[in-house]
Image (cartoon, rainbow, N blue to C red; front, side, top):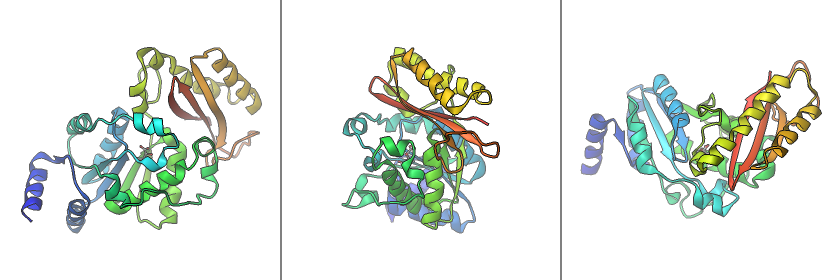
Length: 297
Ligand code: PAF
């Protein structure tokens, strides 16, 4: 009781708290909702950057209180080294969030807070979205994402949840998840934020050397080139163009390039006037895997 009182006082004066555990979080959110206030939610894996801050800012503009979760979710990694090396910077994350004005609650659960003693994924059927692109190259990834986002959404029960379009496939899958799980939550996609030279902002950029950071811009430049040529060239010619560009820049290794229908993310083989398309790239710079995408029409 005393602890909870202290926490509420801290929240009022600091408007920011580092570590809210499930029960306290729940109680706080219940109070917010009883007061007819709205809750925005930004789930993250930490190592926050300006892209995350733009999501939090949008959530602050549209809600009374914003919860930011910081949790590196083990079940969505298909590669143990990637999970181990994923940057963890909780203190810096907290400082970055403090630069924003508004009521922000940081929720940093442990695996057992979310999963209990069974850290495993549920099997989801996302209507085929999960078999495209990232789904082909990262086994079980979207089951892990779906499982943790479902757990997080149920823990926070926000009015709105915000996700970046850099993970466009993830965004579509989360919209589907919310309908599968019948959660009364609005899922809002937010535009990609880019570094000055165009590379999409990502927590993984922290793992790039200066040289790799510069070289990785080929991902964005290629997407821009595809966008420019989209009307004039066939999809197979665009594939050739992309492969050629990466062959000329062997420091960045193309994993896949896809043009997909924006609605269902099915691979597009031919263009149809009535459809909208996006181009997607996954590529390795050293051992760091980066993804990006762009709207084409
Ligand atoms: O996009 C991310 O950072 C993660 O996939 C998410 C949505 C926080 C789930 O762990």
